[in-house]
Image (cartoon, rainbow over all chains, first blue to last red; front, side):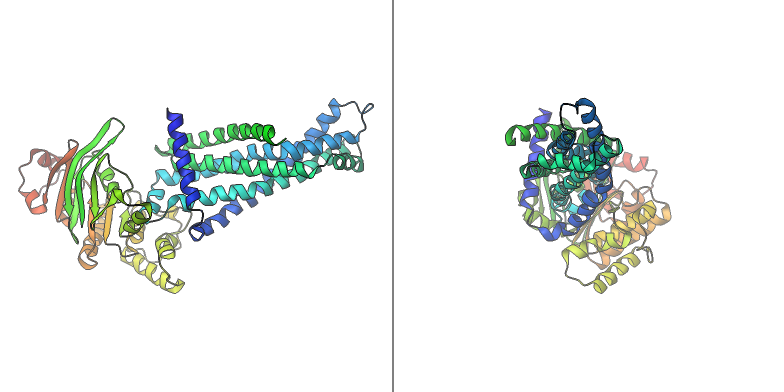
Length: 245
Length: 244
């Protein structure tokens, strides 16, 4: 029963957000601030995640494949395609569920319990337009950018690990990666990152916006936001794979 | 004018109060008093539709608050300024920007005009030169005064005060009370003050509403309160260790 109530509340929040999306002047300033917080400030952690994911994937792929049977360039093919189709988007999203999702729910939750959201409403502001719309919009627009960064860094990390570990030369890695590069895989990755951006920022906004019960309530909201974001990222990943591949 | 008609509110199975009715005339200062947890702040939030009742209505200048569309409600809300218990200052911006916030969004004033108005409001609450301070660097009393400056910056018709003097030292409380009186007298603002500070009540209020036993237990002028024989009201006043 509680789950149904929350689902209804989430749908209502999204409906109000969607209805007020044209009130651009209200959230313009916040939107650009969120571009910086969600996009620009997430680049270091996304680069780091991408590099290490690509590097580990290369080492493990080489370990599992017998390169006497397969050409060494197959490592580049597997790593490149895995990064583009799956890992850049999903691993990046799980990391961002912690970084971005937790920040959003804590920020909004604190604003709720300290009556800052009430203060906005009492002045005649639409607090959903002012607070939720720029966060969700920014997530939808910035996650694809971060996905591209993660993918580039993942392939670079794989190439670097393969070269430094003597598994295969850089040229061979890139040859393998290019052989199995399909532009539609990138489109699939971008679509996934759009969806993940929406899932993480909307769930975190929802949990924070309706937080209650002081510091403990904000803590619970943040935990729930992070856990639910991760679960729904994995669920939507599966659904998108089933639908689009 | 604010009319409160048969208002009842519960949270789940917990009844907060029922059938609360009273009016607040223009320019009047009303104090809502009662024990902690009796639902004073809950009642205050109904006057601005920050909370909705289970039944009953609030009528502001002829508009039934709970029947308005959200767009109409936002217009009505702009007639109000609210001083929240903890100030409810936006902690992502400094003191000056907090006070300037409503001006930036609801007026077409240019920057020098905004600066002039904000400085005047900060001067009114004795916070000259504090504009650059982050809100985290403000004391409890200063936060309330900044909240008050923000609440009145758009010159609202109604100001709602939620425990304006709680947690403050006597001198700062006195300053806040003086400000409330000043605004009522000079700016003709209608004020509704939530408090359990009887000293404040006598200093600022013309009328008193006493919430007790989940209902409006007593309502009248301060003069009537002085001579009231209502036992629960007298108990409350006695418990506040204040002689009237």
